[in-house]
Image 1 (cartoon, helix red, strand yellow):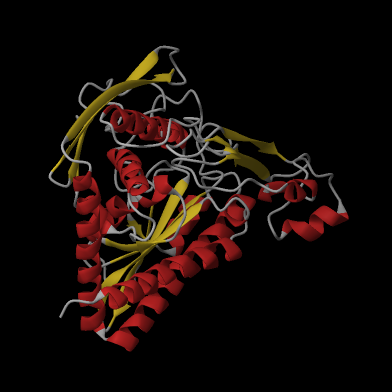
Image 2 (image 1 turned 90 degrees about the vertical axis):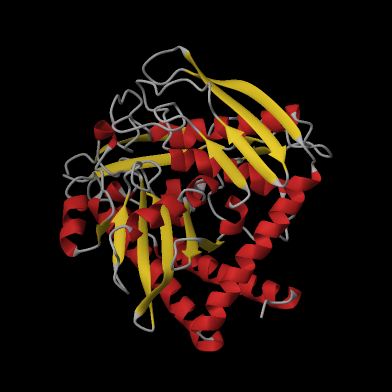
Length: 435
């Protein structure tokens, strides 16, 4: 028996609350300001087949790519209760600083779903502090690469041996593990309340409902087509502009997005894995939907995506991708808005087109400890059909906060050796290796 409107709303909120609680556990448990203060992290809940049931209101560039991460883990035949870690952009990741933790939730002795969190770590090794070297020509220069692997103490030791800030990374990873464990507990609580069959049926009804709502909105625009070519100014190696060509077609309640004509993958690090490109497409579709439509795997059922293998937005290994996640993803979203505008769909104007990344680091004088600092600077969104766009905020594929100045005031980037205040705060990751 299908859920009625009230039942759909109740279960949509129930699934969403699991994802939101995972996010709260993560940000309140994390050690680094990058996750705890800026909240550069995301959480989502998936069903046993790897379809997203709910996501927290976090980072679009993370969330749309998480399905690829779960798919990569499912290929390893996970056992109930196992946890996995990955960051490989070509096996479910986005860019290397984004470490993803996934738990195959044990529900009555079977995998009853997946609890997933992704968090941006301010360093995962590589050629420069922050793990986003502008001159990288291959993925290997950007940091430690982790394909999907089962989480063990040995894996943690390998990871921590390859980063500049191991104590802080250990704390943030512990927070991620706690977050997915909480998600697993909350999913089991839903099963105890509604029964395994009830939760499964509710998930199916909710996915179908979101698909219907999405197709209804897209179908309401009628048959339309539009195309634009946008540009990236350089790739970190060459100053040459790089073309992002996109054609959109709306027909019979579906959106077709075609990136044929986009430039081949470049020598620098502005390339995108397909998962990041899909994130940008889903973000744009989400902006077309009413606020009361939950965001889950039902939305993707109404979207068709084509991107030639080896092009900028469907790069192949070992292309570098660090800036593809933070720069190219924004340009993809803006290009899609432009193509939809050409098709006559009311959308906002293009925004800042960048996440404005700032990253640097070094070594504390007289110590063996390293430190790293990472920030994204707010810009602004273009105007919409009925209002001016906001200024000085993170928009588009980003949804982070800034690092409060108070954190920087108590966390000098080069703390004086023997500073009593710094020693007292070091355990929170605010001094030395923790910045």
